[in-house]
Image 1: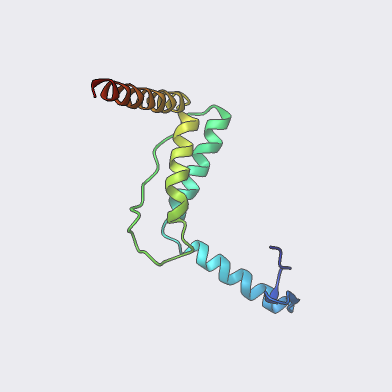
Image 2: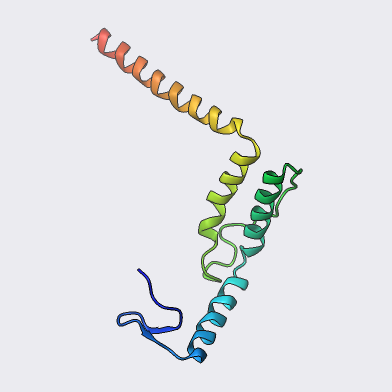
Length: 120
């Protein structure tokens, strides 16, 4: 749903003054910059840029998911999928290995179910 920048009432989407826009923007900026997981998100984004340019990438400091819960805007929910995405971009063969593992698991389960039904 779209709300104009500076809307003071999301139900009616009335335009606020420029002071309201500055206040809401400042509040969002403070919430983002105080999030303890911001440093890792920035590091992962920089790793993605380096991967796209073909440069070597270093390791990021991993922040625990339980580190200061309730602070910031909840970037802790974004960090884990972002880590996996960066790993998949960094090492493309990982996706193929995971797919092969899924196919092998399904095949093994089908084989074991088929054998168990024949014994009865």
